[in-house]
Length: 452
Image (cartoon, rainbow, N blue to C red):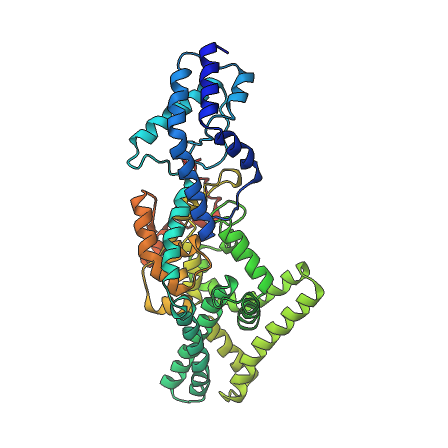
């Protein structure tokens, strides 16, 4: 090492001894989970502070090493004095392939910091942390009624209207009978979709214990599915690996051997029959006690529906009661299937080893549909018009997703990130026109140039 270089290193070490302490303590790790509001804000603050403190050090290092790159062994010693900067855009650790390339990165870092209006670098982690802090402020200012009460009240109203629906089915007149079918059908889909979805994310109550009880009630008793498998497939896979091939790519909704019209308009009617059968198939993956509980809960829900039709609605035969059960349970099955494929399939897909950071994954791989009174009521805002917000902050209730929607949409647009929106009719036409490409063939993997 040249004397002038060694002198500069010693000066830098003397001026900033805390740089070495920071490097030593940095190996302890930082809290993970981009979905945590507080942790996201803390990470953002730490990165911004490091960036500001290191800008002057970087300029001084550049002036002293302008003409010659240090040897490999001395470069490793020098690394303890350099700020740990990452400008690859992926938020992951990146080691330069050569000392010369390292110097180019430092030069580009200084130039970008000087050109930045605030003089700070914004990585994907800090973007998510900044957005999380903004959303957290909205949540803190919201009352319990806004956070949970409104959605709990909607579900309660649907339970209370069930007796009206069963009594209307006693009528021999066409109009009251059809009204009873509609009342029971809408109530069933609100309870099973909106209720089960919020329960799987523990968004109905703040108590974890009650959250587990409600998840079993809504998923198993009301929806005839397994609570464990439902939570795992939806929360762990779909939300954790949104649009990642082989994990959360919505491939479970694909039935390649069906043609477009059968899949989109005829096959959905079989969903109420297939759901408990699929649930029974999953029981081999759980313990004996859990399997017995699941079977009992599913039987309780189905038999209660059947018993009420025979004894309250006064159906005269078993088959007429079963036919009515199928009719009410398939009333909104078509939009249910359509919504689940419209909002992810056809958008960018990612390889497991090249998936982007969370904020890029969700902004690119999720789509919002327009507000619709019936679907908003039955499925919830988080599945219709606030799906992007729901994937970014999955533990928030439907009403809170609607409340933070202006904040999220404005922030993503300001940061030049996608905010996908499209109409139900447009997506339906797209899937009918390109059914083979979207629902039969394997989707192409998206390479996010400049982000990976």
